[in-house]
Length: 364
Image (cartoon, rainbow, N blue to C red; front, side, top):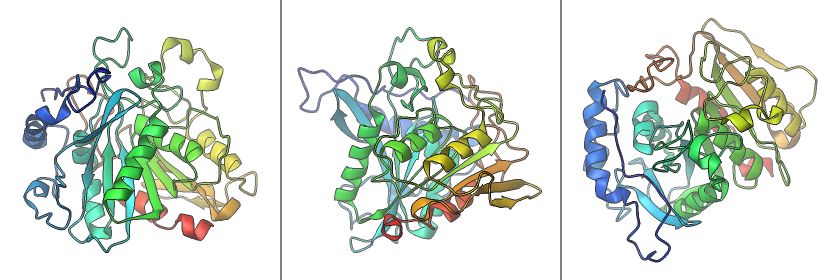
């Protein structure tokens, strides 16, 4: 499948911030949408039910909303963009949960929407979904990260980490804009994501705990431990036991540049250690997990008796690789560990079963 090339989100022209930026994703939007739809026969996505109809759906109750259009603004001199999905069942009088889904390294917001199929679940449960997008920097000198989307999750990944992008503040702004524009229940703001996006979602739990009701994500570990002002947040991570990118038993991540790869603080000890880190942050009782549910396809372990009614969980997919979603995520540059579950398990449902049990209102 040919790679999809987009206009990168680059630093805005400081002398002209009135709407004409160096990068203009809106101009390339139609081509991006067409290419993404045409790629349904390729390896990125085998099923986009609920996506291709979005552009034809009546959105009269939310004038100006286009599920296939970027919404962009300037943040710290960078043009930043995101897309929003609103289920038909959501009306201006609704009080809908918000799910912010964060892409992995080198995957766009549109590609992530097609990969995960989370909008299908959102339509069932009446949740608004935002797909935010990390930065792209042209002509980077980094061995890893150039010309591809990335998040600054701490010690990972790519250009966003290298340029010390404040993605926590950016995502706060995205959420604030969404709350202002749509009927969002501010007590039920959830984050999820894949790989670098999972790492960023966990950073948001740690450093935006006043905002985030819960996090459930796949194939990524917390890679920063600055927890000043942290209030306990429920966190669940889902990891494939045969993940070759971020290995189950230790941290191997291409997004960590050499200087940080040698920094011991940047290295975790894998999925189980990540669970224990969150158990410590959430002041969970007991030195061993009190939740242990073995299974043929996946097992669940975790801590259920934690501060402020929070929990911590790890789901281990026994035959899972780096991509745990139903659709494949293969490109010419990403051909290993990229095949999806093909329906053997439902990551979105597992995540929602965890997320939907928590709200800021009940935790207060």
